[in-house]
Amino acid sequence: MSLVLTEEQEILQRTARELVQSRSPVKRLRALRDDKDGDGFSRALWQEMAQLGWLGIVVPEQYGGAGMGWRDLMVVLEECGRNLVPEPITGTLVLGATAVLLGGTEAQKQAILPGVAAGERFLALAYQEPTSRYDHLRIEARAERAGAGWKLTGDKRHVLDGQVADTFVVSARTGGAPGDATGITCFLVHRDAPGVTVERQWRVDARGAATLRLDGVTVSAEAVLGGEGQGGALLERTLDRGTIALCAEMLGAMTACFEMTLDYLKTRKQFGVPIGSFQALKHRAARCFVETELARSIVMAAHEALDAGAEDAQVARLAGIAKARCTEGFLLIANEGVQMHGGIGMTDEHDVGLYLKRARTAEMQFGDAAFHRDRVARVDGY
Image (cartoon, rainbow, N blue to C red; front, side, top):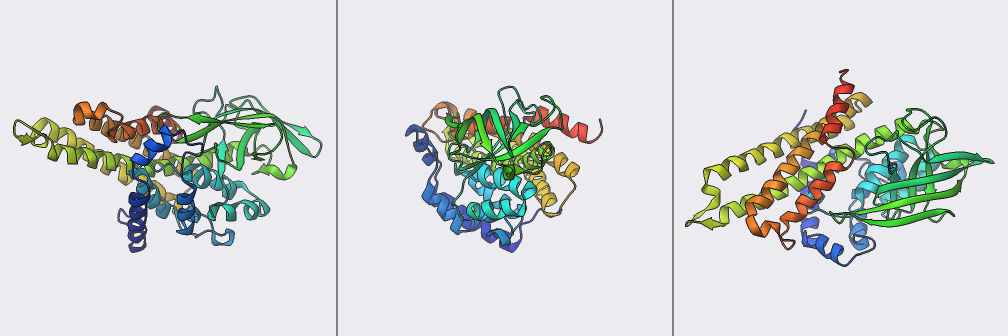
């Protein structure tokens, strides 16, 4: 496994860092939150990302993308994570477009993916329900035959970036009971379809999400994604890639939070000396540094496995290890950051608190550390 970026990836990293630092400072997130911005991000910046090719990094060239790799996407997501960039890359590209790439027909790919790469189309994956927690198989939403098509009924919660989605990838039961691995089908549902209700959710980290309600929504047979009854496997593969990509973003955020704290330790003085000279704080800072490096190793390994076409079991294992590692590392660094900043770290005006809020929501997204440790154990046969 290579832990060194290629020359092309280093150029991509510099470009991404320059754009993020100039166009999306951390304080921008606070302004979007306080203004109750409906989108929760900048469409102008989204178009700049599209022009730079970021929105088509893992989209093949025949569908208007750049045809690059997951390691390249990792570089961009890490830089976005450093400044808590709220643009809907995860919902649209990492989850929505990936589901289409993995399960879509040629016609579906041609109809959807060029718009994603061009920044003209927003997607979202609607799979979580009020009682599902982290289990993507615990689905109660139903899809029943309606002539040549289907009629969908049910509620979806915490639909990441769903507040702006034009098209939703929705999971519903065409057979079986909640928890069964079989009998799940994924559908492409348009936002403006009769019976679709989208309600904006406001999360503690100010990132976009929505509740999706389906009240007898009728879709055609061509809306089925990945085949009837095959949605469980499609969801699992999509969510594993989403988890790995989220870890890249978490890596960037924890690194920036640690750097912010380290800078404070070097400049804040007590008893006439920088507080970073105190042995106890040195030890705590050293542990934070170790956590970032451990996280970096597994995150790079997981993205490299995707590029190498690793088997699903290996991808699932790496996704679980990466999420458990990044969750605990990010929480430690964010908590230590707030505490080492002292009183100012507890105020909303200081940016370090935004990283703690992001750490708390990222912890729960796609499953917490305990969930993923259990999953890795099951993959390994325990």
